[in-house]
Image 1 (spheres, rainbow, N blue to C red):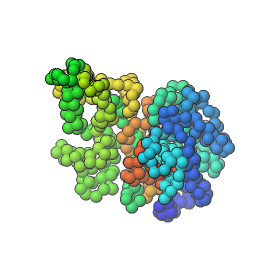
Image 2 (cartoon, rainbow, N blue to C red):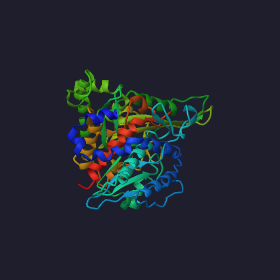
Image 3 (cartoon, helix red, strand yellow):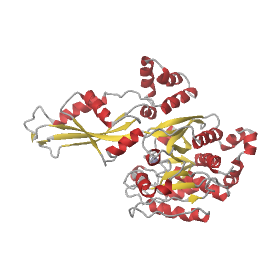
Image 4 (cartoon, protein in one colour):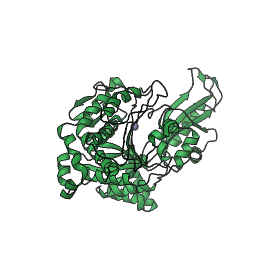
Amino acid sequence: MRANAVESVPMTLRVCSLLCLALPAFAQTNETAKLLTEIIRIDTSNPPGKEGSLAEFLAPRFQALGFEVDPLPPPHPATAHSTPRWRGDGSRKPILLAAHADVVGVERDKWSMDPFAGIIKDGYVFGRGAIDFKGGLAVFAEAAMMLAKNKVPLARDVIFLSEADEEGGRYNTEWLAQSHWDKMDCEFSLNEGGWIIQRPDGRVRYVSISTADKIGVSLVFTAKGKSTHSSMPLPDNAIFTLAKALAKIADYETKPLLIPSTKEFFLTIAKTSEPPMSTYFSNLVNGTPEQVREADREISKDPLLHAILRNTIAPVLMQAGFRGNVIPGSAQATINFRMIPGSNVADLIGEMKRAIGDDRIEITQVTGASGGTRPPEVLERMSKTPTSSEDTELYRALAKEARTEYPGAAVTPYLFQAGTDSLAWRSRGVPVYGIYPYPIDAEDLSRMHGNDERVRVESLKTGTEMIYRTLLDVASRK
Ligand SMILES: [Zn+2]
C-alpha cells in the first residue's frame, strides 16, 4: 500500500515537501513494529499498571538521541508518567503526543498465544495493547525519535508523554495536570481516538480524527421490597420490581443527538458509501423526522455508528440476594451510559424514570466504580468542555497527511464513542485530536480489549509516516 501511496503523491509534493527526510529511516526496517513487540513484553496490565518499567525502558533510547528525560517521581510505586522532550528554538508553544502505557488485563486461556510475548506472525504484531494503545505509543515514540535521528530543526518542543492510569486508577492525566502542568502544557496534542478504517480489500475508506469524547456515567437502579422467608412470597418482591424496570429499559431507545462533528462525520461517509447506506447517512443529518427514524434504524445495526449518534445504555452489573431461602429486601442493577457531550446526568435520570414509570425504582449515580464513572464535578466539567476546533494548524496538518498517506480516503472529525484522558487538556482550552494511527478493519477492531489483539505491521509503518510528516508540518522551523 505504501509504494502505491508514494507513487500517487504529486511530484511537486514529493520533491519540495519535507517528506524526503522520512524515507531513509523507513528504507531498512519497520522500527515501529519492532518497538511495539518490545513494549508488549513489558506487562503493564492495570491494575496495577507498573508503567514505570515501560518508562525506564524508553528513557535511555530517548536520552541517546538528545531528548531531555526528566522522570517524574512516581506518585505510587506502580505508576509513573514520563515526558521526554525534544527541544525546539522556543519560538512556538510545544506539541504533545500522549499515549497511555497501561493496558487492560487478559483472559489468558482464551488467547491462542502468550499475550505478552510480542509475536510477529502473518504480517501482524500480536499482543495485549497492540491496538489500545501500545501500538499508538510505539508510533508516536518512533515519529518523535525520527525528528531527532534526522536532526530536524524545530520551532517548538515536541513532548512525548507515556501516561499512567488511563485504563483505571487515580494517578491519570488529571492528576498529572494538577501536579505537573508545566510538563504537559502545549499548544495542541495528539491522543488516541479516531480510526483509520479499511475496506475489505485493504484500501482505507475513511480517517476519523476525534475532536471530542463521549462521557461515561454509571447509574444504580434500586428496587426495595420486604425481606422475608421464600416460602411465603409477597407482591412487592424487589427482584421482580427491578426485572420489570429493566425490561422497559431494554425496549427503550434514546433519540439521536448529533453534534456538529457527528453531522460532518455522517455526511462525509455518505460520500464514500454505496446506496442505500449513503442515503441513510445523509438522511440522518438532513432528512424529515420519518427519514431520520428510518436512517437511525438502519445505521444503528452497526454498533459503532449506533454508539456515536446517541446516549447509549448498557447494563453491566446486578446484585440481589444472599441465600436460597430468603427473599432479599433490595435488588440493584448498575447501568453504564455513554453520554453525548452537552447531555447531563440529571436529565438522563429523569428520562430513565419516565421510561420506567415506576416510583418504586430509585436511581442514583455511583462514582469510583469501573465503567468510566467520574465524580459529579468532573462529569459536569466534561459535559461543558468544548469540542476541539478543526481550525488549527495541527488538525489541518493531520488531515492533509492522512489524505497524502491514504489517497482516496475521506477525512472527517469525529466524536469518539468512548472516553479518553483528553479532558486534562481540553478542559484547559488545549485542543486534542484523537487517532489510532494505523489502518484497521472491523475484525481487528473487535479484538481491542478482547483476545488475540493485533495490528498490521504495514499499518504501523504507514501510520508512523503520517504522524512523522504531521510533526514536520507543525513543528519544524520554516
Ligand atoms: Zn486506550
